[in-house]
Every structure is written in structure tokens, then in C-alpha cells.
Image 1 (cartoon, rainbow, N blue to C red):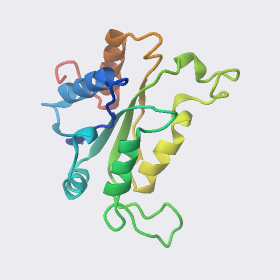
Image 2: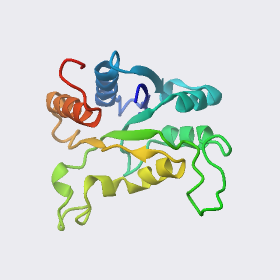
Image 3: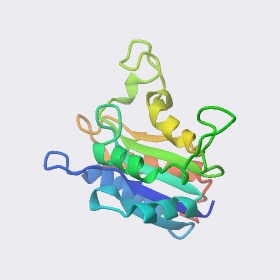
Image 4: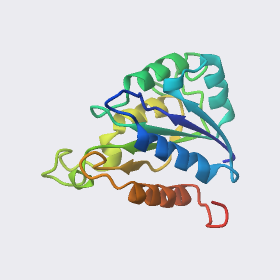
Length: 189
């Protein structure tokens, strides 16, 4: 893994300024830049479809930094995927069966997410997610990436971000997560 594409999927509004999401996006870029070749996309700033497709072909790893809105991606992020994940570029029909025609094989991806859901709601039979763990709660997001042939890296979540924000904790946890996932040493970061 030497080429990393980091995508900022936040959709900016007056009531959702995305300061935490931008902080996390910047933290990812700063942590990996130097140890890896890094390219970025900020979806809300606009993008060229063909340029984005070229970035995916170039990347060994794609990191999606995004808030979770209503248990899914922001609308512009979903539109980005609809436009960029083009048939014949990202996937084709496959004789092996549904979901087996991904053209991004050999590439990995990671979700880094921000949620208002408290971490105590996961792995809790009485919690909102009915005993599901964090990865299960975003399974629908994983399916899209796996459909195009990419393999998951462990996802990251910053939780309780509105009710009980702790930016220092989130940055520290993200740093540890990146070091673990990318097997980075303290000297490389």
C-alpha cells in the first residue's frame, strides 16, 4: 500500500458546518502524508468524474471520511458514488454471480465516520442497534465497496459527537486506529 486516496464526504450546511469532519479528514491526510503518496477529494467542493475514476485506479487504499446522516451517507456523497462508480470502469456483469464483477480488486478501503450515536448502543442487545456491532451498523456502506471489488479495512467511528464532543479523544483514537490499520510505527507518523 503506497497510494492513498482520502475522500471528505461531508455536505456542508449552516447548521452542520462539518468542523469535526474536516478535522478528522485533515488528521488522516497529515498522518499518512510522507509515509504514503496521498491524494484528496472534497466532494462538496466539486469534482470531475473522470479525474475521480483515475484517482481510484491509482489508489491502493481509499479512505472515506464522512458523517453519518440518518444512518447513511450525506446526499452529495451518495450522488458522487452514483456518478463516479460507472459500469465498465468500476464493475461489470459477472458470470460468477451478482456482486462478483468488481473491477477494483486488489484495492482496500476504510470508513472513518462521525456519529451522534453513543458507542454504548453497539454490541448491546437492549441498545438501538439491537446487539449489532459498529461494522454491522454500516454493512450497507460496505456492500457498495465490496460490489466494486474492494476489500475492507477496519472502520473507525467517532461517537456521541453532538451530545458529548471530545475532539482530542477522537483525534487520539483516529491516530491509534491509523497506526494499527496501516501498521505504522511512531517514527513514520
